[in-house]
Figure 1 (tube, rainbow, N blue to C red):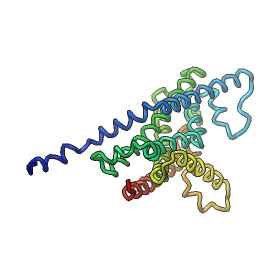
Figure 2 (figure 1 turned 30 degrees about the vertical axis):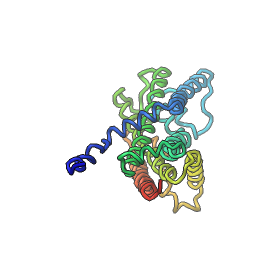
Figure 3 (figure 1 turned 60 degrees about the vertical axis):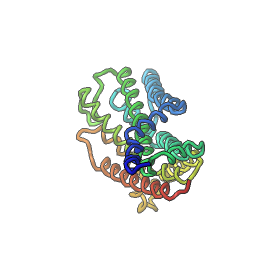
Figure 4 (figure 1 turned 90 degrees about the horizontal axis):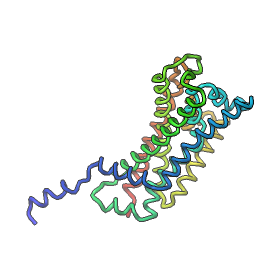
Length: 286
């Protein structure tokens, strides 16, 4: 083997990041489980819209202040997408994100398919980046799918003339899409932060269900702690603290304090989670 061959070898075996990312997306979106989950998520806005239509026709609406967003959605097509995202953000969407992150590392490790990545000319840092991008893309697809189906259901239920904010401002269809896009981006960032933490857990185990259970426990415990004033000093460090601020995208003018605080907190979780995952995956044998 000549010196020229040795010099040219590493350049030919380097796998482009885009190619790895596309391969990861094909692996994610070709799994039957992923398609089933996306189908179930798409059904949620339809079921909610049907329930609201039945309640409106019978003169019965949601019965307490905790579901005031759904009360507004009975006559406002703009509210339904944000309301569906707000309610599913409290539990369902974090679980779906944890499932994706658990399959990304722990799932592949338990099935032996991760070894192919490690044997290929792919550094562990790039492997983690591809997995993180895959989880982020899956969460974005989930959020956008729910929002689009909810918007269509809201328009069918209320018509195109029912796009107005909670402040009473009537919006054009384009302006309404902008509000919904902001909500989708903000929710996706929150879920990506959860996904980063889930990846850190996934890098430490071979059992994907452990990742899901851990995220479920963390979400429930965080919600309970936010109800306790005795630990108010801990509240600023809890990711769900700003989730109630999602409703601010429906106001005009739009308050930015809660949304900004939630975005900054999510970025911190994202950086910490990926850092822990990187530290684990680069020091783990095999």
